[in-house]
Structure formats: structure tokens, C-alpha cells
Image 1 (cartoon, helix red, strand yellow):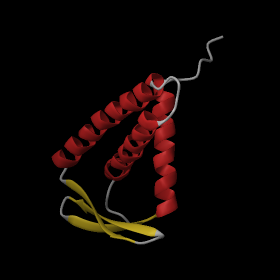
Image 2 (image 1 turned 90 degrees about the vertical axis):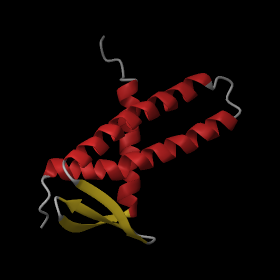
Image 3 (image 1 turned 45 degrees about the horizontal axis):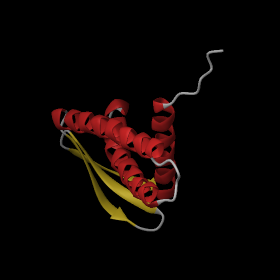
Image 4 (image 1 turned 180 degrees about the horizontal axis):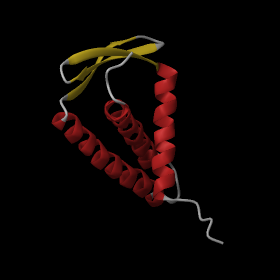
Length: 124
């Protein structure tokens, strides 16, 4: 059983996932820059603006964590799982995350940020 309230745990998980989203987007940015797309600019702008938004959110997460004395540290990784130590107001908790779950969450966040930037038009 965890002692960490849901809101704080969500922030701690964002501190895990958002940097991973940035890594993926940065790699994708490099691929698009080197790609033979005829019109690269829209793709580059989409990725760059999304990265800026995620960086702003990550800065807010880090500020929240510092203010509330929260820390997240990766302690162990293997092919299937990654373990993180959550430090919550002096208490240590270890949380094991299934790597495919992490990948799926990163993908879900990417989809969220892309759709947030360009919501579908259902006005008519």
C-alpha cells in the first residue's frame, strides 16, 4: 500500500514519462529533418511546439516536486521492468513499472499532446 496521495503520485509519474516523451520527440525531429519530405516545416513546427509545451509542463512538475519534497530515481532496469524509488516527505517507496506499460503511456501522452495542439474540428 502506498502512502503517497494520488495527486503527488501522478506528478511523480509525470516526472518519469515527460522526459521520455521529449526523448522520443527529439529523435523524431532529427528523423524528420533528414527525411525526404517535400514539406518538412509543418512537421518540424508540430514537433517543436509540442516539445516546448512539454518542457513547460515538466518545469511545473519539477517545481511542484521541489516544493513538496518529492523525488523520483530510477534504481533498476531489465528487459521487462524498470524500478523507481519514490521519495515522499522522507518515506521511500519502490515502484516497479512494466516496460511495455511505460512505452504505452509515453505513446498515449504523445497522442494527447498532438491532439491538444490540433483538435479535430467537430463544429459543423
